[in-house]
Length: 496
Image (cartoon, rainbow, N blue to C red; front, side, top):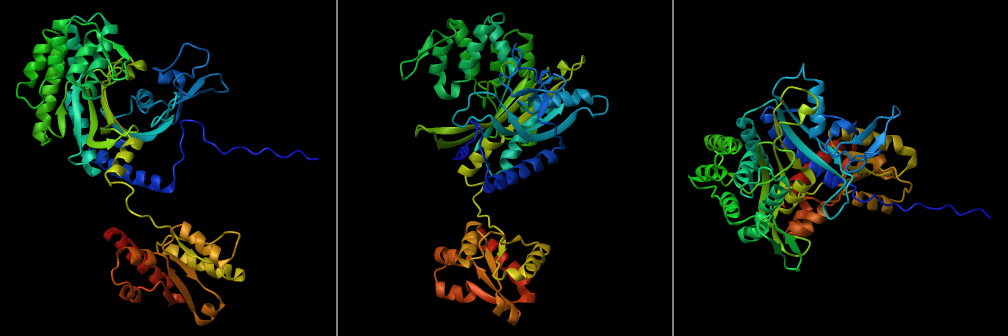
């Protein structure tokens, strides 16, 4: 007896997701709008491969024979390790260094694409996701950082999020200066605990951060988090810095006082002051772009200004709690990355937008995917011997710019063809049997008419008389009739 063939279970690897047509089209529309802003600022597109030599990615390489911690890797036939890119910035650094002699400096580029992380997946945490970056490599001044913040604000406005976001700005030099003034310059382990405590300011408030700066904090569940172990004056200095009022005219005086005589900290305060002057001059109010001393990003990565685009409207999380949506992107200055490839100093600054997270936010506020998308007009097959004639209809519709297809399924049953058209969300089907062919006509069935009539039209009888669900159309008038019908559908959809 023959062995029964084993069937595979169709299942995705953990941490990966499929994307359906509606999501793809909606996200593509969002990306098109972001690109328009980037290009308005003078940035040009760049694409790098998904694979890089593993040593080029740098920061996530373990000390093992197989470099697969944090990244997905494989060995080439020349025994060199290659890895799927972890972000879009390391490939940019390699590209810039490789083409250093021919590129304009600053080099302004934007890139979009998938990145891959060999990490444990979880809710909202995937192993493959899309990023959309813009970077200026070779720009040393805070004006370049200010421009990134303004561009990020313009992106949010372009996407319909005006009044629902704030771009928060800080400077790692100021953070490091405060830590040095608090006596932590030579204590990186304690400094890291302090920075992580500051990063929890939005969630825990001043009292919670104060506990984490001291002996520690016990949460609602009874779990205890050990603190940084700082004493009174150290805690007071850091809290005075974190709680400095961004809207106060004395903000920069407060920051300067908290960094003390630390030269790096004073330089950071001067950079923030310069950036604020540029925001003011360009008309970016402080409820749109705001200096915020509590912003902590890229502890081992950023070297100067850091910024974060935060959406400020409330949403319900997986626990049923009302929370602020939070960050959808950010960036900062990273002056050390290109130095892995070249001896000379190459300053750089950039932003990165989390495409999936931003798309989710736009769906929540009705700015993405809320418009119904119609499928193609379906030309039905009523007579197998007339397929060439049906195909000619499809070609005419396509030539006129109408999305159309010939039904190519196995069954030529009319009911099943209609069911297919419904599932495709076709705006109409075209029917030509022998009687219609003899009369030089076709039947056009308007599949949207019934939906609109039941939803929006108060006088259905009058509306159906004006737009009947099925009509006979002269064969040579098919294209114009379909174009008019599709235009009506678009108008009705926009009105609804």
